[in-house]
Length: 447
Ligand code: S3P
Image 1: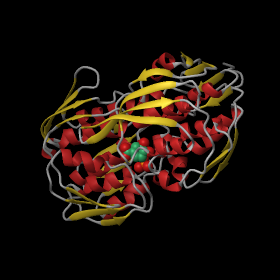
Image 2: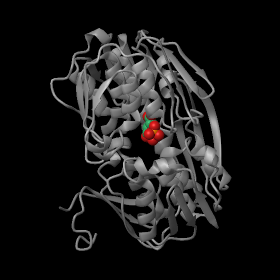
Image 3: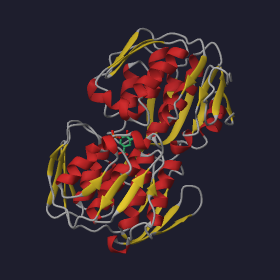
Image 4: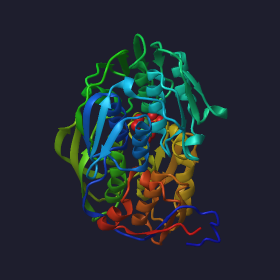
C-alpha cells in the first residue's frame, strides 16, 4: 500500500489480487438486526431466554454489554450461544456510565425507544460515524409521546434520556421508510399508555414485530401499519438467529457476476422484507436458486445456490429499495460488472448510513476504474472490467466488503483501506472470502 498517497490511513487494509470465481459453500454469521433484538427482548422478558446463532460482531456485542451495564445477567456459551436471565422491566437499573454503542444505529435507535418507554435514564454514545448520524427521526416522535431526550447539536448523539414518567401512545405517520424508526416507536409504545400505531411509507424489515410475538406480545400488523397496546410484558423464549442475508449479499454478488462460479450459501434468513437483493440480482440476470426452505425461530430460512453468469444493467425498481437498503454497496459492484447501464433512484437514505454510501461507493469504484455518476438519490453505473487501484471504505463495513468483491472483476490488484469495522457485522469475512476464491490478505494498520 502506498502510505505516501494515503498518509492518514487508519485500521487494517484488505489487499486483493484479481480473482475469477467463487466456489464451495459458505455459512455467513447470524443476522445483525435479529441479534440486537434478541438481546433487547431477552433482557426485559421474564425467564431464561436462550439464543443460538447470535452474531458475535462488535455491534450486537455492544448491545449485549449495554444490558449487562443495566444489571441483566447474560452469559455467553459456545459460538453464537447467549443465555439471558431476564427478570422483567422492573429489574433493570440505570447504567452508572454512558452506554457506548460503537458503530450501531440500530443499537442506539432501538435502545432509545425502549429505555424512554421504560422511563430509564441513560446517556447513549458511539463512535465517530454514529455520533454524526441523524437522531431527530426518533427523538421527534418519542418526544410527542412525552419522552425527554436531549441530543447534540444538529440532532446527533450523544442522546441523553431523562426521566419523563409514563409515555402516551401516538399514531405516527412516518415520513421515511425506516425499520429503526418504526421499531423505536413500537418499543416505546410497549410501555406507553394506550395503543401506539406507526404507518410506514414502504415495507421495512419486520423483525421487531415478529420477534415480539415470539416473546408473547400482541403486535397487530395491517399492510403498512403496525400497532401495539402498551403495558404488555415479555415472556422468555428460545430462538435461533438465521444467517444474515446482508452478509450473504457480498457472496451473492461475487458469485452471480462471475461466470464459472458455483457457490452455496447455507442457512440464510429469507424474511420477505429483506430479500430485495435477490430480486434485484435476478432482474440483472443472476442465477440464484432458493433451496431447502424452512422456518426457524419464526423466520423463513433457505440455502441459496448461485451459478455465475454475465449480468446486465437495469433500472432498479424503487419499490425494491427499502427491501435491499443495506445491500446497495454490493449491488453497485454488481452494476459495475454488468453489461449496459444500471440506474439506482429513490435511495437517498444511503447517504445517512454508517457512511454516505452513495459517495463512498462512487469515489471508490471510480478509483478502481468504474464508470459511475452519483446522483442525490442514487447512481448511474455503466458496467465493464475494473482496472484496480485503491478504494477507501471510510470505515464502513459494507463498503469495505463490497470493494473486496470488486477484485473478481478487476484486471489489477485492489487495496481497500480502513477495514476494521468489518468486525461490526462479519467477523472472519476475509478468511471465508479467501476459502471461497478471493485472493485476499488482511494487513494490519500501518500507522
Ligand atoms: C435496521 C434497519 C435499517 C438498516 C440497518 C438495520 C434494523 O436501517 O439499514 O442496517 O435492524 O432495524 P433504517 O431503519 O435506518 O433504514
